[in-house]
Image (cartoon, rainbow, N blue to C red; front, side):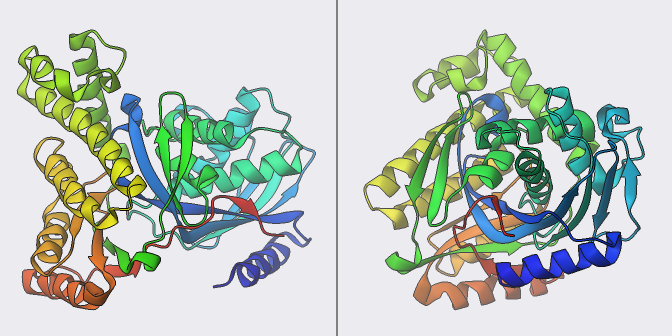
Length: 391
């Protein structure tokens, strides 16, 4: 769907729903993370890129403090609430499920002292939910950007990302880091975003795979994850325990050169594995950055695969379907592959030469069929623009 058509369609649906025209239409993308998983809440490095898939929101200002929310993608009618009544965990005020994400953003804006006097919102998204591609961050950022523009708040993009994270941490109850929201808000077309999650320093890294005869496949295993059920929180808690035991503010402060000494000082084998993943994953982000800067893009493939091994064995967030994508893709000629996103399902990425892309895609699909798994969905990741106003 072209953006213009999407904007017109969402605006028309808004008019049918609320009986008036929206004040504008905004878009915010999902993301795929090239490298740097579970490092963002450890003050580490990440390198996501925005996808063409977006959450579109038609929005109109209100002056009575009421927030009315509707999704084209979730059964049910309009959700009406007053954001000030929203409580931590998405409870109170009438918000629950998907509505807690945009409602949490409005509440976070109010918490920060911004004058948001209510809104009517209609959202339609092409970001696959539960696929590890940040459908929730797209909801948050499209809401934040619309409010920022409509109410003239003047909040910079990086701060909108922080408000989106606050919404998810406090008002949804998922202890995520800052990567997903920053990618949705700040990525640019044709680039991956190198982000230092400690100080939010950003660098747009040229990433034109097509010009190099390469393709980045996204393989959605269609295994749904639910990060709010506790597994994500347990991983984060183990990282924080490791940092406390080692006397550092965050695992970012453990260097690769100091890793062996740090591991020797940790008694809990689970915490030891979590620490090893974070420290080595930060190093892999910097390794990928160096290879891209030198024009050695095919050489990032083995680094991606090494990242998957670490996520599987040390962080223990992979699953049989994700492991099968990586194994079958690499066995059929891919340059490298790894799971992407929080894990426990979702998607994997596969770096492949253009000439081999169809054969690798068939090999992955055939492997799923042979294993009795539901057929995966495959598409090419095209580095796309971050959040923007469409109409």
